[in-house]
Length: 221
Image (cartoon, rainbow, N blue to C red; front, top):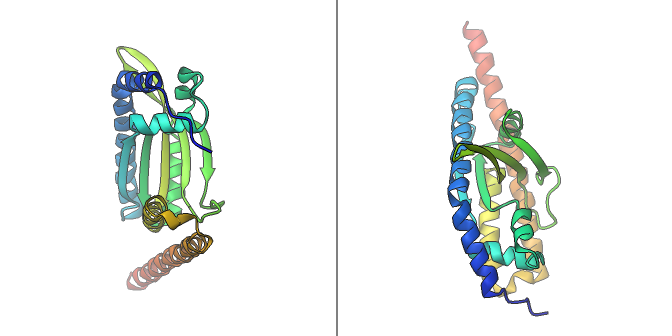
């Protein structure tokens, strides 16, 4: 089945709408970035280590927005279709350990000014291809031209290991014609499972070292 080609009028609408919203999107990103940086410092003080390794952000391109609206058959009413997209603005938080992911998620959910619209826990419930991550859709309040508005943002929280797999899986899946071969799909899933075991073992090793360190300090004292 050949995908329906987006019309020029649809592309014009997306470009104009995104231009109109771009400043608001940037404000929303800066708002969340600031909160995450403060959380990072809080964790460093309380845990004596960095729980957040990296914070990345992006705004979907016009082409990506239009492709998704068309694929989801939302282009009949472009204003409705645009409003239905939850991931035009995206933040990715890379943590070191699995429990750090849930700590960050809990802290973000507890923010008084955030409205959590949806949570998808792909760590406890991985996708069939092996993908693991913690997704949140939130509404972020911004002040624009002396009026408060809410902007939807997708926040993905994952470990370094989960991000490693997702990045390489994306590269393999979308750049190779053979990606639909069953053996490749199974191999990718197997790699995801192996990485998950390593993720869990690294967390257990961290806890073991911390426990030994605490015991050593108690004996010294």
